[in-house]
Amino acid sequence: MAPSHIVPVPTKVAERAVRQQLDRLLSSPTFQQVDRLKRFLQFIVLETLEHRGDELKEYVVGVQVFGKESSFDPRTDPLVRVQARRLRARLERYYQGEGRQDDVIIELPKGGYTPSFRRRGGRSSARMSVGATFASRNTVAVLPFVDQTPAQDLRFFCDALSQEIVHGLTKFRGLRIIATDLGDHGNSQPREVASRLGAATIIHGAVRRSGERIRVGSQLIDSASGTYLWSDAFDTPVDDAITAPETIAQKILKTLEPELLAAGEPRAGRRPTRNLAAHNLYLQGRYHLNQRTEEGLHKAVDFFQKAIVEDAQYALAHSGLSDAYALLAHYGVLSPTEVWSKAASSAASAVMLDPHSAEAHTSLAHMKATQDWDWVASEREFQRAISLDPRYPTAHHWYAMSCLVPLGRLDQARDEMVLAQSLDPVSSIIARDLAVTDLYRRDLDPALEQCDHAIELNPHFSPAYLTLALVQEQLNDLDEALAAVQRAVHLSPNTPRMHAALARVLAKSGKRDAARKIVHELEAHSKQRYVSPFEFALLSLAFADVDGTLQWLSQACQDRCFEVVSLNVDPRMDVLRRDRRFAALVREVGLE
Image (cartoon, rainbow, N blue to C red; front, side, top):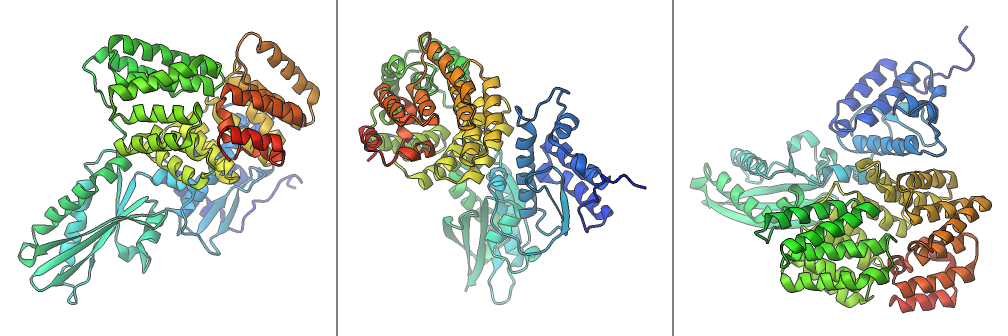
């Protein structure tokens, strides 16, 4: 007799069909470069088919799939839960895209690790998931041009035109090109076809004939919003029908080149210096800046300073130095009063040396927002930077986080963050700040997905775990929040911000003695190095000390702490919004 604990396979689908669907998933483009998720999916599906679904616990998955040691503790390491969310999002992406017509659906229900199997049924959405959008942003679908002549005798012309456009697009490095036949998609609209194909933009059009002339109308459409990014018409004599497709395709591609470059190629670093040593030092500085660690920020300052020694007229190095000083303050490494004058003077020098530098104007805009709280001037500088170089991701990123978010224009801020991510899709900090934007919008599911994406990009990026903890806290899932923040502390053990966040979650979880111990350690630590008063404000709030919270927030405003620019939108501040003293602080920051 079979043991009583065996759980039947949760399916009405034949085992053979499930195995075939598993193979289809594992070989699909959606799962092509995510080996850990492939192992995860294969393991839980096969274990379930072997009637061992009841044994799929977090510890087992961590050890068997992700190679954790036997000492692995799921309570303090959220790896399996994070990967489970990623797997759910990846499965959703697959079934909304290339697997849209698949008959068998494999799902991972929330709250466990045993998959379910079912036949397709019910409606399916044409809307691309956020995860699908990540993958498809550099993907262009070229749909066949429609022959609108009464005799339908220009099909050869339409096919040739589509082929020439595809040929031309392949020369743009980084673009993924999809050509398709509308006949494969019934009477679907182009936007629906693009969604099925996982494409972010669509090129399509129509061909008409009038007398001895052929007119070609073409459009570029954003598949997510359905908006027309570009439209134009081209005429050619009927006698040129053989050679005209190549000529018209070249005209179309030349017109679209800025959009296509932005979608496909990473921005090439400008090098307005002949000093190769200065340029190499600048690039190393940017690398360390992007790590967003204490050590990395200090190294960034050192490299930018060395670049300026090599070439004192190098505007990009001055801009980088301004950004590094600013982030040392933003991340609570140094007191803002120690670095603001250095950051501001470096930004001003960068603009003076190169008035046409997007980087320089971005640095200056950042200063005007976070130091001066001059929101009008800041927005003007950010817009100037974007007009100089629409493909500079930091301009869009900081415009969103330093200007639009404080002003409460959260939908516009998210649009800028999405654009920044499309320009730099491998940036962990952009993914993290997109999660923060969603958190401020109280849109918590996308925020979770963005946290997972940031962790996927860099599993050692502690700010992503910190933000994950904040999101879980808003969901009132304090166990998950505690696991995430403990991971952040493990990755950045010398960062006061991480320890303060841990104390906050402990206090909210009812573990006040443990939280107070950390608070006392931070108080002692603050005598040796800078600890932001904003952290003490949050700790006071966790202990329901409103007066203490407001006193610390007042000190944070005096220090020009970066976090105070988000007082109007930070959900942690919601309990203070009816307090007149809090309203006075918001006015002080210029955010009435």
